[in-house]
Image (cartoon, rainbow, N blue to C red; front, top):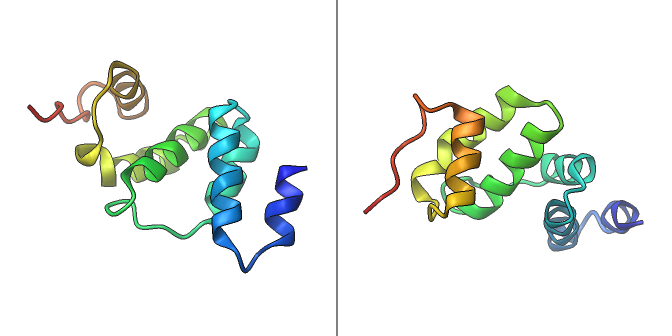
Amino acid sequence: QAQGLASANPARPEVRRLVAESAYRASEWLTAAHEYAQLEFKPEGEPLTCYYASVSFFEVGKTAEAANLLRRCQDLLLRTPGVARNVERILGAREAVPPRP
C-alpha cells in the first residue's frame, strides 16, 4: 500500500522518502531498498538517509551497493552502538572508520 502511494506521487520525492524511512524502521527491507533506490540524494549531505539506504540494501543482499554507499557517509554518522555494529557488518572491521571523538 505504501509503495503504491509513493509510485502514485512521483513528483513528490518527500512521499517516497517517508515510505522508505517507514519501511526501514519497520524492517520491511524489500520495500525500503526499492524506495531508496528510486530516491536521488547526496550521501555526504544526507548521512542518515545514506545509512538507512545502505542497511536496507545490505539486508536484501545488495552488499556491494550497500558498502559503496556507506563508504561515502560513514565518517559523518553519529556512532551509536547500533550504527557501529551495522557499519562493521557492512564494511567489515578493516574498513570501518573509527568514530569521531
